[in-house]
Image (spheres, rainbow, N blue to C red):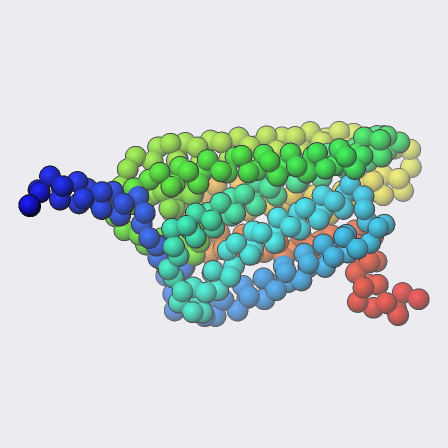
Length: 326
C-alpha cells in the first residue's frame, strides 16, 4: 500500500542526512588571482621544501646527537614537529589547487585539516611559552637549571603543551560537525578554517563565533603575557650581571627565541586585527597573507635556529661538510 506518512519520514531523513553531511566543499584558492595560481604555486613549493628540509635536519640532529639532549633542544624538536604539521596540513592541498585544480575536499577531510591547522597553531604558541620558561630558568637560576628542568619534568611539560592544544581545539571540530549545511559549499580560501566553514551553515553559529574568538584569544593572550613576564625577569637578571661579556652571552642565547616569537605572533596579531577592523583591505590580500602565514614561519624557524644557535650551527656544518671541521 502507498504510505504518504512513511514517504514523508523517508524524505525528512534524507534531507537531514544531506544537510548535516555535505559530502564535500570546493576550495576556490585565492579569489582574484586565479589566473596566477600556477605561478604563485612555485614559491610556495620552494618554501615548503625548505620547511621540510630545515625541520627534518633539526629533528635528525636533536634525535641522533646526545650532546643536544637538553631541555632547550627538546622544545626545539617539538617546535619543528609542530611546524611540519602546520605546513603539511595546508601547503600540499594549496599546491593541488594551484597546479592540479584539485579544489574539492571531503567534509571529513575538511574537518581533519581544520583540526590540525588550529592544533598546530596553538601548539606553536604553547611551545614558545615553554621555551621562554626554559630561558628564564637558564638565565635567572643557572645553578638550579638541571635540577628544575629534569627529563621527567620536561616530558610532563611537553605532554601538558600537547594536551592543552588538543583540548582547546577538539570542541571546534564538534561545533562544526553539528552544523547543517544546506546553502553554498564554496569556500573562498585555499584551506578549511573554523569560521570560514561555519559561515556556510544554514543555522545559528553564534556559539562557533564566541568559542572561535574568545577561547583562542584568551589562550594566546595568556601565553603572550607569560612570555612577556619571563622576558622582563630575564632582562632584569641580565642587566645585573657583572660583566658586559656575560650580558651579551646571556642575551645571545635568547636571540633566536625572540626572533621566532616575533615571526609567529606579529602576523597572527596583524591577521586578527585586519579581520576585525580592516574592512577596507581586500579579501585577496587576506587570503594571500593567510597562505604565507602557514608556509613562511615553518621555513624560517629552523634557519633562525641554525644561524643563531652555536650548537645547531656547528652540527649542521659537520653534517654536510664533515671534512671541513677537521
